[in-house]
Amino acid sequence: MVPVRPRHSPPRPATATKLMHTLVMRVSGLLDEPARLSALLAEVKGFVRTDAGLDLGTMYAIARNMAKIVPGSVTFSTVPTRPHPDDPNRLVWDRAAAERLFAGIRRDAG
Image 1 (cartoon, rainbow, N blue to C red):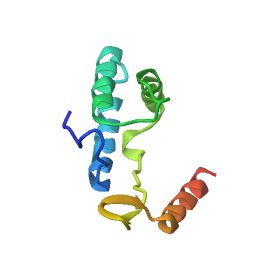
Image 2: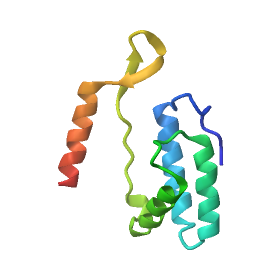
Image 3: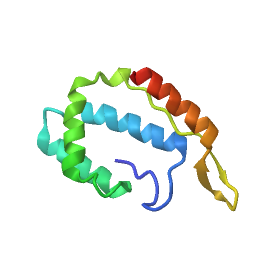
């Protein structure tokens, strides 16, 4: 695993997308190896910050559900961002562009 960012610094979109693509590919190859899958998820958990409810058990369940997904059919999107008005080193969502993205996702899911 390659460290992507310090634990409290937001990843840049291209880096986060590359990480997610790599994870999908690696996890899909470990679905028949529970011990290795658990070890990978524990390693990932050390590099990213997640919501409180996303513990290792939940991550494992999500990964197991990925068995139904063909890795090459996964598309990644990044929420559009812009520099924070008070701190150009921080990113905030570009709300109008983000809403267009989410509207498209809702149409695809429907």
